[in-house]
Length: 215
Image (cartoon, rainbow, N blue to C red):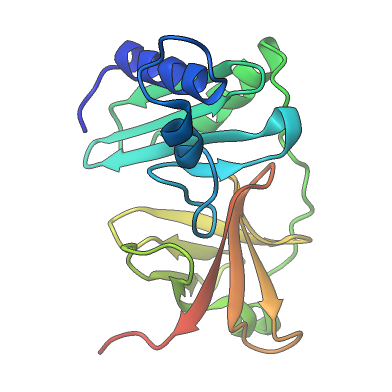
């Protein structure tokens, strides 16, 4: 879908009004609520969903060659933002803009810049995380890789040309550019078979399993 930031924001506002069951809405409240309710993993019908109570939100990030965007909507408070950029490397900027908007307009989810302690890379961390993974609750997404750089960090390779650094931390692995947090959840020790992928603030948690890379 091609759009402009004002048109995307107008669509988001129309969606929130339908979820709030306001009169004369673009979509029926029943359909809008289906689109704003989790169906599989963090996904609904066209959106990613997260949060609870006033912090309940839905939206979607967009990525294409040369572009990155983000739409996030809080129907309980009728707040949100639509951000569009013309850069392959704009995710850090989008994350900072969302945090600034959340702080300025007192969103129910403050999106704080979490402080994490970085740990030195160790053979244990390399064995634990390095590998190829595939999402279990998100379909149509290519496997991604976590690669050791050998200099204290890892590289997250999304499989579509996007790569960013990951660092060992008290949370698992963290990507300071995008706010990605990767945690190993099973088994308790050794190479991780199942991991979680989320963002700082707990948005969009998804599970992934280790897979053998294709030859």
